[in-house]
Image 1 (cartoon, one colour):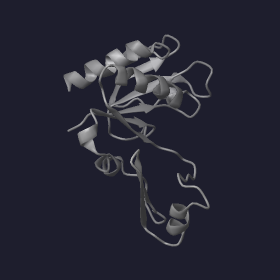
Image 2 (cartoon, one colour; image 1 turned 45 degrees about the vertical axis):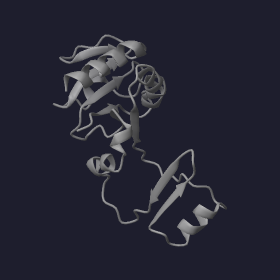
Image 3 (cartoon, one colour; image 1 turned 135 degrees about the horizontal axis):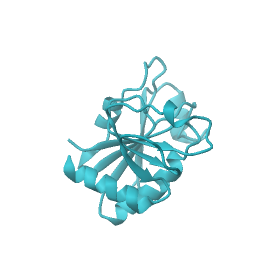
Image 4 (tube, one colour; image 1 turned 135 degrees about the vertical axis):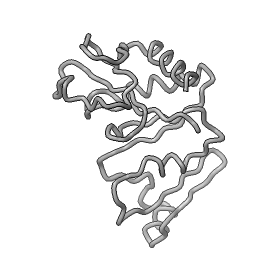
Length: 168
């Protein structure tokens, strides 16, 4: 099974910022990461006026748009329950990946690195520390029982992820 690692934190802590730096660092090490991003916002990856958008809006339950550079599958889920991370992982092409990074999903039963920044609206005590947390990345020293990583040291975080992957 391919390793799945969530980068989890409260909104505004810097999950996307960290991932934008971590992904190229992992790629430079020969690791092929995939990404699943959770959002609480309504989103659409299609563009109004494009044929694919118009056909999807006409009622297609799934629309796959493909070119020689990439393809995207959009699935309409108007009656969907809460997102199922295992199902989303199963949609990934695991033959092209060494690791699946997950942004968000802090309450899921999946290995995770929690992020904490001083000055955010939440305290360290409010982090969702559970048995799936493998490390905390922070910009200040925090008193925790988990491995503490420097949130601003992307090489240290990549080293930790690479070690974690090989130890699995």
